[in-house]
Image (cartoon, rainbow, N blue to C red; front, side, top):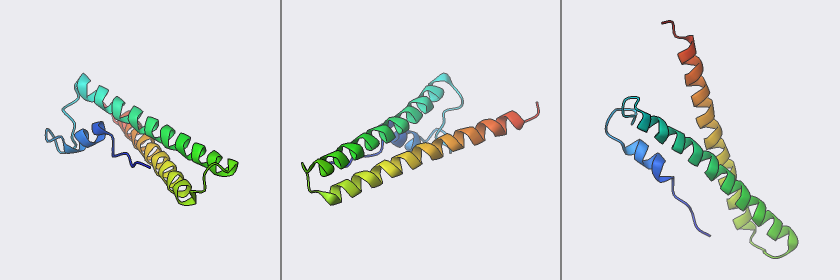
Length: 103
């Protein structure tokens, strides 16, 4: 069993020193970076869910007796999904806040 670290795009965004929020001022590059981060978050959640389902099927079929690994995979899938949902919620909140601004 291997533990995957945070995606490199997320780490780069968090460690970026160009601005306090880690964004480089609204260029097309920062938009594509954010898109990559969002896509990576959803891809990670999907991969964790797939691993959880695979370990569940192995346990049910009797091919594995690693109950601890199954529980760890389930927790990883839950945390990945919660991260993706929180990112989505923040994006929706930011969008609605921008739409409420008067120009």
